[in-house]
Length: 304
Length: 304
Image (tube, rainbow over all chains, first blue to last red; front, top):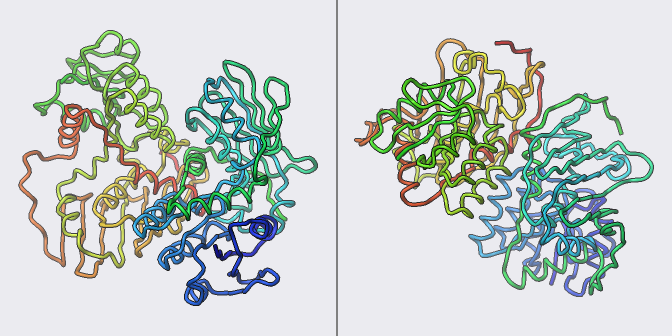
């Protein structure tokens, strides 16, 4: 199936383009971007023009930042295309609900992707937790914003989500693996004096789960979820790539497909063939809750 | 049916108690409150003790502030009672989703009330708009926090919602009367230097609808929604009590029951008889979106 990629920035080049190149399902037939392009692929600057010219392209995958995403997604749907959304699926919950409704009304499909859920050990972690009760937990998601978003000021502008841009990856895993949903009890958000989104956040969730998100970590990066249950301890490290149960490392399952983005694109192919949507907003609801309920604290100014 | 009222503060005494006293459906059988009580009604300080002692009370209506509400609601459901929630139905969307799920699993019902939707001219406004397209609009919701929440510091604490406490009334009407849902495009939130929630907010919604919420209005108070459509202009004034279409005042419908709270309690009686829930969170989603996407601006310190 032919697909167009919209927003050719770091994440598109690092993840989407290689995943599509290696996939038996997809042919990257066009890109739409103000500045970026992919060698050997037809490049457009304007989405409307591409949609008009290339009616053979059935699917549009959006990798641009969350704030402009809604208008692009709605245009693609209204032009009869299936839509795949990088995380987070939009800047607001209300716009995501409208996109899902439009896809349904137009008999198309839309996929809100959560790449971290495709990490190798997430499914085994979910299976192990299925019959357990969580008694406490600790999420530690600490990385260096200068490394992962060099010079990307939009992450600190309204709608850019700040530290929830990586933090929502942790929440996407948590909401996937827990046997029962959690809710937010309290939160503290650290806003740099000169910025509009938090650079650090502490979330106090139900079931005694504490989450610590920080974008100021230099040196080794940490992406871990540790959960105590009534029948032992589970730890997911390296963003879901490594699973430790009661201190013993679990073997990775035999997967026909490895890699987060290859698995997302395989799932997208399934959704298109079945004419379905997959729009789970639960990680984004927890982020919206943190912005709504969070205590705001001022932190030192941040400059890239 | 016997009902217990939890949280005997200003809204309980001003609205809930008189509505229950005048209702043919309800008998106010108990109150639960740290400080308040109602003359001639059995008073409790502890919810658990009341639930234990009064198994004949089938419904619990919660009027306390949003942050502690979840634990009370969950306890009441787990004790087999139907639950009615003042607006907003909770401090977070995730906790409201859990309450709805619990009510369903326990074969009970829960009602997220939006009292402004029961204003006399909301239903006629909705009927008139049903076949129209909105081209622009202006919501003006300006009141004096010192008058309506005298000394209530919790409204400025995290989860207290600030100016969205009244603003969500406007959004509850808007989401009820519009023929198609809107989403939030941008927002500006004014946080007093010494407070955790906004005292004013400007929302830019889709369909060209602008909302102006302000809690600093002394003198006359304003609660108006004006909408331009492809077939004329509609204005709801006085919080939904007065409807003007193309400049002409509409007559109020003949209602068997007048008053926002009497109508809420009549609806609650219906839900209990039918074993149903009514948990529309769309006004709260727009507020969560405003906190997530809003640009934060610092305003002068506020003191009661």
